[in-house]
Every structure is written in structure tokens, then in C-alpha cells.
Length: 451
Image 1: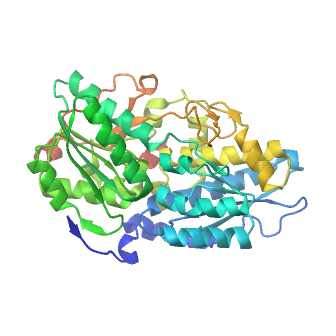
Image 2 (image 1 turned 120 degrees about the vertical axis):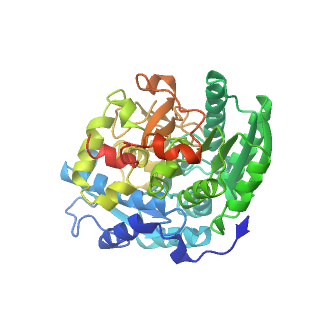
Image 3 (image 1 turned 90 degrees about the vertical axis):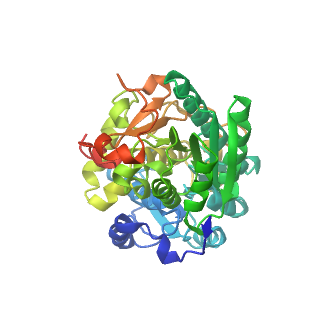
């Protein structure tokens, strides 16, 4: 593995990020949706995350998404139970640095006093923020996947999405099932994960689960987040070990580096996957045809789901009709939009039920929620109900594969589109040109913009 420290500039996310950052800066840090909120007093929502850096693919989409949702709620009458109180939205950039995450979160809580904080964008960042939110007693609703975050027993942390051990096991099961169905079984898998809370939990889960199912783990490597510019040495090692599958848990930026390294060394496993939503960010979709045939979890595809998740299709149509910037649409995949929208819906429903400006009362209302798919901004199966540690016991992992540059669902079976089958083995790199001819644009959000 060729490791070097990459500058902050080196992590800015390519052309899409360069195009959208002016739009984000137009909102300004600590953005206020309404310059002068009328009485009653506004309810404040904060977000701190890596708007620049390796995790920007998650956080930039969050800023756009939450801004849209806050404006929609304010346009349609505000928080009804609070006399139509408007929402205000503030955000801050920690540059994908956990140390800065803690200081920026504290600054946000001290200066702007949000009543709730939404997704941070990365388990390592969220872990750094947890002691701060506990000290200030403000709830954080966050689409992060590390089991470790829940084991910290922070009563102000809530995780609506499936944890990484569930996602990793689901991805492994899908690979094993597909391999058997296609008469190309997975026998020797390589695992590559970032360091820190999320990646190390994924590495451990995959390293134990595959052998329990009779699959050998020939390599299980953890790399230093943000410090590897070229994964060619690592991928060459996996190739020499005759790995027939690769499963990764990484940042958005590094998912693209890994795929480029696979192509560079002509590594042709039966399939490869990312047990994280990085596959549905602009970093990954900017790979174009080189990113085709990759698997990911959790993901979403309106192409297959259609109207089977109540409210998802009309919401996405409305969102993409308002988000007119091409750069912003490219950042906002259907998957990321619906995950962030669920976080927002949880916060809004809690504000309505709490009927209070007290952050602790809002936190208590979150803990008692029992929301169904299709309820207030909940467009993910199978709804929301938190257990005693803040985990959504109804959370559902969705596995997808890019085919012809469109994300198609592979599991659960209830969401698989008619006639959809996995492409397995994936075409060799030398065969890609023929396999990809006539494909549509990869970015799921671009497809969504035209639904």
C-alpha cells in the first residue's frame, strides 16, 4: 500500500464538489432559513459534518437536503403543535476531522443552541461528537452505521439506519447466495476497511461471518483513513492471493480510489461490494463505466421500488424539481436523500409531539416514536421505533448492484424489480466497453431527477 498524507485540497471531491461548493457557500455556515422569524420563536436544527474532506460525499448532500426540507416545512405552516413555529437550519464544516468535529459541535451548541442535531456524516465524526451532545443534552439523529456508537450508551444518540454488522452480514449473504445461484461460488474473499469506529467494526464482522459460512478470508486489511493515495499495492496483493470477491467499508472518496486500483492492476473478482452508502455518492458515480457492476448496502433505487414504499416517489419528484443545479443533483442520490429525509422526519415528528422548546423533551419524544413507512418523511422500510440504546429496531438494509449504470436492488426480495437478476461474475476489465454500451448515466439522482 502506497501511503502518504493527502492535503485538504486533495480531498475536495472533484468537479462535482467544486461546482457545488459555491452553492453551499451561498447558504453560508450557520445558515438561517428565514432572516427574521415571526413569533412564535423558531425551532433550530443544526448539522455538523465533513462538508470538505474524505467524507464530503455524505455531508454536502445533507446540507442541500436539510435546507430543502426546512424550507418546505416553513412554506407549509411550520411546526403545527407549536403554533406554526418556523424552523431554522445551521451547519458547520469539520473538514472530515474527528478532532475538529468535537470543537465545531461544541461551537454550534454553544453559539446557535439548536434544539436537535441531524446527521454528522461518518461514524468517526459522530463518535467524536457524542460526548459533546451528552454534555449539552441535545439529541443527535444520525445515519451512521457503527455498532460501537450505540454501545457507548449515549441517551441523546439515535441511529435510524441498520448498523454495520447487519449491513456487512447482509452483503456477505447476498454474495454467497448469488455465487451459488450462478454456479460461481465465493470461496476466497478479501476485506478492505478504513480505520476507526465504522471500518474496524465492519472488518471484524466480515472476518468472522464469512468463515462461519464456509468462505475463506484470505486478507483482512485496515487502512488509515485519508492517508492512502493509491491502493494498487493492496489490490495487487488480493489478486496474488486469488481472492474471488472483495468487500470494503470506506469513505466515498476512497471507494473511487479502490475501484481505480482494481482496474489498474487488472483485478477481476466475481464481484466487489461496499458495505456503506459511499457507492451512491458523486465520488463513486463519477467513475462512470468503471463503477458499473459494483454492489453496495444500504442503497436505494426508485427504478425498482416504484411506488412500493409509500410516499417515496412523489417526494423524490418534488425534491428534484426544486433542486435545479446539476452539481447539486449529482450529489443528492435517491439513497442519500431518503436517509437524510428520514432523520429530518424523526426530528420534526418529535418536535410536534414534544410541543416544547426543551431539547430534552424533544429527545424524550424521539425515544417514544413509533412511525410507519409513509409517515412524516419516512420513506424507508419498515418504519422507525427505537430500542433502549437508540437503535431503530425496524431498520432494513437494502442491497443493490449497478447495471448499465443504474442501481438495481438485489435484496430484500420484496423490493427486487421484475426480471432483475445480478450480473455475476462481473465482466472483466477488458470486456467492459462492450458490456457498458448504451448505458444510461450512473448517478441515481440524475435518473431520479427525471422520474
